[in-house]
Image 1 (cartoon, helix red, strand yellow):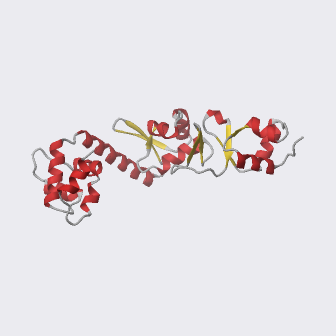
Image 2 (spheres, rainbow, N blue to C red):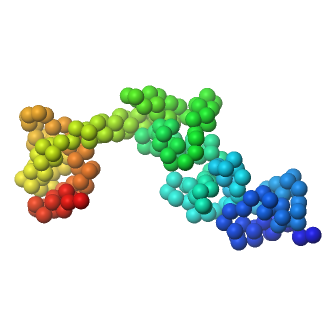
Image 3 (cartoon, rainbow, N blue to C red):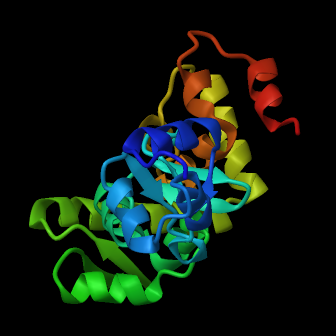
Length: 230
C-alpha cells in the first residue's frame, strides 16, 4: 500500500494542475473518502466552484485580476467557494454588479446564491433604472457604487446618442483648443443646438481615447484621425 501522508498530496498537486477525488484516493493507496478528506485538510488546496466541486487544485495557482483561475473549462476562485466569490466581487465592484455581469464573469449560474446572500445580509441590492444591481452593505460604499452605476448608465445612454455630428463638434473643439478636457469641451459647446451634454462628450472621449490626445500640447488633425481610423 502506498504511503499515506500529506506530503503525498502535496507532490500530487505539484505534478498535476487539476485532480479529482479519485486521484487523491489513489495517491493515498486507495483510501476511503473520509480518509482522503482527512489528509486534504493538511494540504492547502482549492476546490472548483464549477462542475459541482468535483475538481481540486493547489492553493496558489496563478489567478487573473479578479482572483479567478481556469483550467480546461474547470473554474476556481481564490476565495474557494462560489458564494464567497460572489460576495467579494459585488463588494469590490466600483458600480456594484448585476446578475448578468456576475454570470458572465464566473460562467456559472448565480441567481440562487445571490438571493441567499441578500437574505442573510452579506450583500444588498437595489433597482437602478431597469437594472437590479447587487451592492455592498456598507452605506457609504453602497452609495458610491450607486452613483457610479448611474453615471455608467448615463454614459451608455449617451453612447447610443453619439452621432457623427456630435463627434465632429467634439473633435473640432479639441483642434481649436488643444489640451481641453471633457468638461472644457462641454463648456465651449454651451449653447450649441441641439445641446451637447457631458455624457455625450464623455462617451466620445472614452470611445476614441481622447484624454490621451488632450495631454499633448499641440495635437493636430493627424492625432485625431489616428483615433478614428479602424
